[in-house]
Length: 496
View 1 (tube, one colour):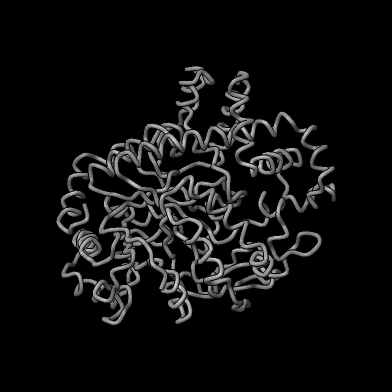
View 2 (tube, one colour):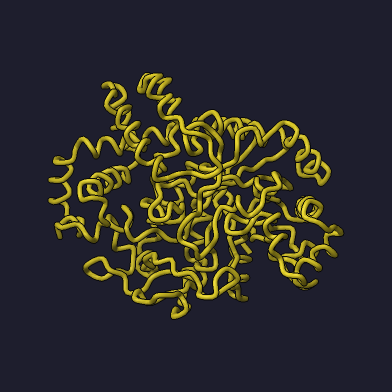
């Protein structure tokens, strides 16, 4: 087993950036994010877990980003741009939207891009130089900015549907010609990324200054229509036209009887290994600038992954193929000893997956909402190893209230017996006490579970394509009284 640093006994809260309250239609990296960090500090929490922060593709899922390196422009704080003189007070006021419980992405995308382009039009020479310096330090920006400019030029079509073959093939002469043709738009997208990362660095410094660290998610796969696949297709299993013969997914499981057909291209693991996993090293290096700990999404796919024929309509027709295992994990943990890695070891697990997690030394995940089927269930706290992370539920689960409300009769009865509580509110509180009191090094609850919210506040329903990734916390819900309540609970179980 690889030696790893302990996370110490601590607690944290899961709240995505888009779920933060505020006046601009979606959570941003501005004042509300700092206010939530203050809340975490007052609540005795030492971790803030978020979801991926890349620019989203279809369905607005943060797990279908168009870039593994870039930041989401929607998270840029307009107030900070106004403070820099790039937006007028009237423009800032016009950017405000009525506070709702859900993000309206369609309305937001129209208004936010126009606002950012207004700010970009007011750049002076010094700020333009800052963008050029940022691009020089981050080589991925050149390809990403050109990709976004080309997408806009070609009516948002996927790169493999662009009319020019040389562009689809990412040939140098075509790239340079289009860089000139679309220079203004390329510069805009580079500036957007410079602003995102500058705002993120300020937020992270503030959060870390309170003694709080950030857990981010590293999706195991990237989207077929992404700057990553377009610019570095040699890393993926694609034919000459950029078409995959097999795609990623998971077999039928707890979440879906048909499995989940994700559709992401699969990696050419043999080519990546020959290269020393350079793409992954660059990827984790980028994530390390954002996060203090990285949750490796779909960890079991590093042992064996579910490969589905591209023409399949469901994931049922897939089969298991061998992943990179310790060849990759050994490289990442050696290259980045300053980062904490967490294994998202959920789903269909085998002895080989458990052996890989143990060999890597990474803490795995225990989800209380999966626990209440009988005394031998590995997710029950009395069966935990100390080196693990306990969750009430993840972003793919219902809220604690929603879970209890929809639980079957036998599951509910066992949970009530185990927790020593009955009734929605009593069980919610008992579930939080159970997680806090477990031997797990870290306990994380969804913010909705501390707020006592039901299924209407669920973040994602796996296997359902539309309507996810929209829930927002209302202003004022993260109150001083709630912080005191959480801190008392956290202190009681030695996690402050």
